[in-house]
Image (cartoon, rainbow, N blue to C red):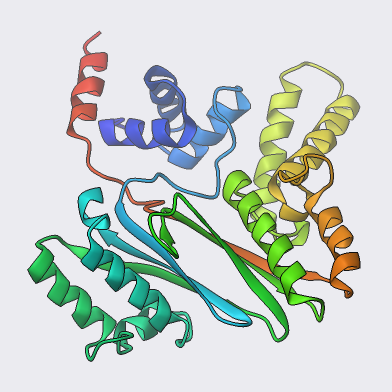
Length: 307
């Protein structure tokens, strides 16, 4: 199978490995990107894939909070210059406000009448394309709601109130003091922004993801030449570390650097005056998973192939 420049590029960005390592991995695995990624990791050349993809789009993330609900949206533009445009920022802010009163789907939000206007969100964006002169699109929306408690939020790299490059929502269900809930909720949202956990709890890690990690660890451990009994213990140890690093409640809380997030919530319950349940979280980074074309890369790979 022919290994193309695009395949090498994709694997390189996923793994952080060098071009020759990526090309060798693809050759060894007949061009299968996922298998090549696992091969690189088993050789210790690449780190584990993160939940987020490659950031390669402009625009803004918007957040709007209600009493027991909140939404986060992503509206893309072609350039960062437009993202700094006051008209564009106003549109994203109004899209966020509108989203709070929808079911949290792109379809419903696109069809809804935008806050402060008479047109739908979709038509408002179309009209803005004509006046601003750059393509725009509503890419994503996520809504969280609890029957009682709070949905706290945090915006990283904020450019204006409720607008920025990376938004996080954290839903906490509790009958406790709302000020305490908002405080610990925002801290956990900041933690999520920094460490990007795969899931809130161990049970939420998909079984196929866990088994894939286990298989990679096992292959790597067997290369040490140790007996199978020792290999199994090594794998179990690495899986424990995987869960500690990947599961929100098991991660070390970045705010204090000592407790787990789960323990930090337990500590907050005393001040809140009631149990606190972490319902879930949403982390939305601008442009994740969108890839921009890079023409120079093909020439770079072509040059490598001639060596």
